[in-house]
Length: 105
Image (cartoon, rainbow, N blue to C red; front, side):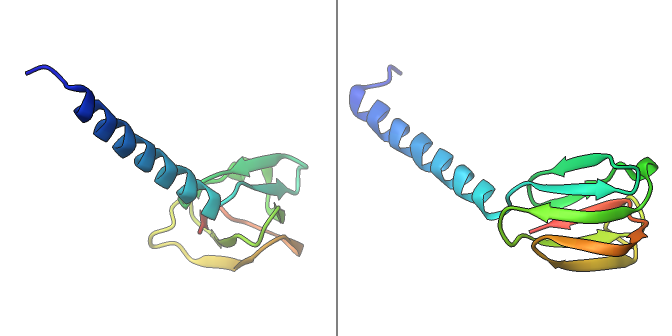
């Protein structure tokens, strides 16, 4: 069955709406930078659980451009691991936190 011009307009509007929704979702959890005691910096994007470069020592700071919620976990998974810190926005830790995973959003 051939695609008619009216169907193309509907498909274009649907695709545009989906893309707009995707970009709106990205805006809610902006990238953050995790700084480790070695000086290494890891940029983490998107929501959900992300594994950290834990071979760089403990986490000493989290930098964000806007208040983004986060939780650091002791293991390299966010399920079943102990939360070692949580908050929103930029923070500097007095003592390095041994964390293997982070949740944003």
